[in-house]
Length: 140
Image (cartoon, rainbow, N blue to C red; front, side, top):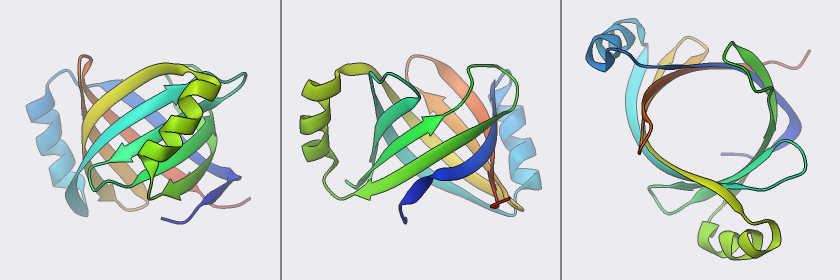
């Protein structure tokens, strides 16, 4: 994955799954592609603004992700930047003492696509199951 400048934008909406089996069947019915199974561990750091997380992926790679998004339950536009890394543990060794860890989120993600929309079905350790719809916005 290529690095993105902080100017990249997307629209996201997230919701807790009430009936995961029923909702998973509906997603599979409307999806053009998927599922792709992804294991993730997100380490969030203390920052004065926005959110900074280091994402560990199941293949040993990672991504440093900074994003700005309002805290609300409805759909929200995010501005973000992503930088891939082949050494996420080494990066964690630098960021943890510098910024401190705010939270760790471990999840298994089922990724589907429907047109330009990424559909995530997330099983989040200790929190439950969630649906996230994400559309990356074109410039302008």
